[in-house]
Length: 85
Image (tube, rainbow, N blue to C red; front, side):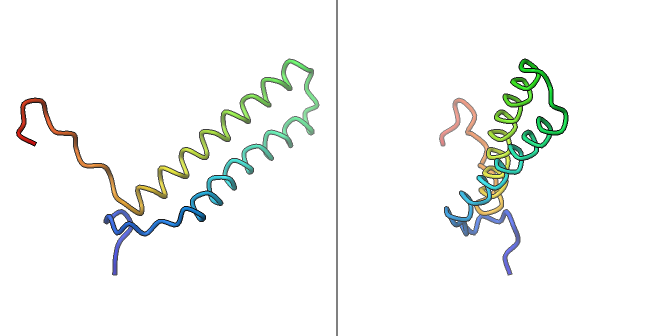
Protein backbone atom coordinates (compact mmCIF):
# COMPACT_ATOMS: atom_id res chain seq x y z
CA UNK A 1 0.00 0.00 0.00
CA UNK A 2 1.29 3.46 -0.82
CA UNK A 3 1.70 6.19 1.74
CA UNK A 4 0.79 9.85 1.11
CA UNK A 5 3.72 11.79 -0.25
CA UNK A 6 5.56 8.84 -1.74
CA UNK A 7 5.36 10.27 -5.25
CA UNK A 8 2.75 7.93 -6.67
CA UNK A 9 1.33 10.67 -8.93
CA UNK A 10 -2.29 9.96 -8.03
CA UNK A 11 -3.89 13.40 -8.45
CA UNK A 12 -7.24 14.22 -9.98
CA UNK A 13 -7.36 17.72 -11.42
CA UNK A 14 -11.14 17.80 -10.95
CA UNK A 15 -10.85 16.90 -7.28
CA UNK A 16 -8.08 19.47 -6.84
CA UNK A 17 -10.28 22.17 -8.39
CA UNK A 18 -13.33 21.25 -6.31
CA UNK A 19 -11.36 21.19 -3.05
CA UNK A 20 -9.59 24.48 -3.80
CA UNK A 21 -12.84 26.20 -4.75
CA UNK A 22 -14.53 24.73 -1.67
CA UNK A 23 -11.84 26.16 0.60
CA UNK A 24 -12.13 29.57 -1.05
CA UNK A 25 -15.92 29.47 -0.77
CA UNK A 26 -15.72 28.63 2.93
CA UNK A 27 -13.46 31.62 3.59
CA UNK A 28 -15.70 33.96 1.59
CA UNK A 29 -18.81 32.70 3.40
CA UNK A 30 -17.06 33.33 6.71
CA UNK A 31 -16.20 36.89 5.64
CA UNK A 32 -19.81 37.43 4.54
CA UNK A 33 -21.17 36.19 7.86
CA UNK A 34 -18.78 38.50 9.72
CA UNK A 35 -19.98 41.46 7.67
CA UNK A 36 -23.66 40.57 8.15
CA UNK A 37 -23.36 39.97 11.88
CA UNK A 38 -21.15 42.93 12.79
CA UNK A 39 -22.68 45.39 10.28
CA UNK A 40 -19.50 47.47 10.12
CA UNK A 41 -19.21 50.83 8.44
CA UNK A 42 -18.22 51.11 4.78
CA UNK A 43 -14.46 51.27 5.36
CA UNK A 44 -14.32 48.42 7.85
CA UNK A 45 -16.66 46.37 5.67
CA UNK A 46 -14.35 46.91 2.71
CA UNK A 47 -11.36 45.84 4.79
CA UNK A 48 -13.14 42.67 5.94
CA UNK A 49 -14.16 41.94 2.34
CA UNK A 50 -10.63 42.41 1.03
CA UNK A 51 -9.24 40.24 3.82
CA UNK A 52 -11.81 37.61 2.82
CA UNK A 53 -10.61 37.69 -0.79
CA UNK A 54 -6.97 37.46 0.32
CA UNK A 55 -7.89 34.61 2.66
CA UNK A 56 -9.70 32.80 -0.15
CA UNK A 57 -6.63 33.04 -2.38
CA UNK A 58 -4.41 31.81 0.47
CA UNK A 59 -6.78 28.91 1.18
CA UNK A 60 -6.76 27.84 -2.48
CA UNK A 61 -2.98 27.93 -2.51
CA UNK A 62 -2.70 25.95 0.72
CA UNK A 63 -5.13 23.26 -0.40
CA UNK A 64 -3.54 22.98 -3.85
CA UNK A 65 -0.01 22.73 -2.46
CA UNK A 66 -1.00 20.16 0.16
CA UNK A 67 -2.88 17.94 -2.30
CA UNK A 68 -0.08 18.16 -4.87
CA UNK A 69 2.61 17.31 -2.31
CA UNK A 70 0.54 14.38 -1.03
CA UNK A 71 0.28 13.05 -4.57
CA UNK A 72 3.78 13.72 -5.91
CA UNK A 73 5.96 14.23 -2.85
CA UNK A 74 8.24 17.16 -2.18
CA UNK A 75 10.43 18.68 -4.85
CA UNK A 76 14.00 17.36 -4.88
CA UNK A 77 16.70 19.74 -3.75
CA UNK A 78 18.11 22.06 -6.38
CA UNK A 79 21.63 21.11 -7.42
CA UNK A 80 24.37 23.27 -5.96
CA UNK A 81 26.33 25.57 -8.26
CA UNK A 82 29.26 23.74 -9.83
CA UNK A 83 27.76 20.29 -9.44
CA UNK A 84 27.74 18.01 -12.46
CA UNK A 85 23.97 17.62 -12.37
